[in-house]
Length: 408
Image (cartoon, rainbow, N blue to C red):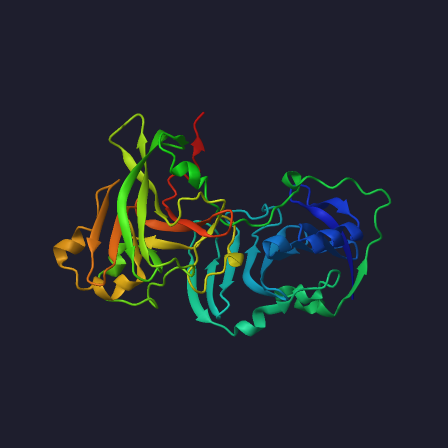
């Protein structure tokens, strides 16, 4: 079987056709630079699949097309090693009729999400959104989900699932266009690679008097509160819900971040927003542990062992879970001593909305807790580095300001 390959900016879902033709040389240059492009694979002049590539984002996705050129399956690979990619997700859509739009809410779906250790979640929704959803967890041999990074031009290694039968096909290049158009600016390209959540101006979060317009809630102004000094005998920081600390545990159950600091005491401050139309309404927007007074020049997610940001999808983040409306900073040395807290001391770790609490432990460490933004949920911690790459601070982001805009 012969398949014909050509290179494009992407796929126009409205017109159901590839758009923005690229020469093979232009696509090869983008591949080497890690920039995004799309491969169109045809059989007998009929599009069979699309391959979206963006190595700077550790991303590659293969789309399978149905007979009316709707995308009906997606195989997502992430480049988790220099020379290997991992099949992290497979999504299949079942359309009920020829005229049902692509990705219609009532189209049936089956999603398989795999971890590199073989843990796999399978979710099936035969009737799409609003219908029954069945989920199962299982272990699978993870070795079969790894592939070598494909050499540019040889895409057969990516053919999996329903496309497995095409791996023996001969790939032919469609001749380059005689007069290719100019490359589209990144913001005008028909698709973009997934972008994990990024911090929203952490410097302004801790700027007293900074005003924000928060969707659905109106204007609020930042106040900075001194929450005390965190004692860190080991320099291994943990951000968590203090409710998880009720019994003696160890770092295998609640691991510290992989980036450590020198043992010592570090100041903790809270960014609290007060709403202009109701001054009694306050929320903790973020908690900051300052390691150096030098400002942070770059930001990255604070990670725990086993967390790989290259695997994150659009808007995703690694964070700590909260189900008591409270978060805290604590050194790893405190974990064995937590269970010895008296009940009345333990209960004092849970502040009122907008507040903070502290407790001293036998280990020489202490706990500084704070109310968590809008309440229960999951919250990321950002690591700020100085211009020279040293750790400047950790910020537990309560996401209150995630979609807010700075008022002018």
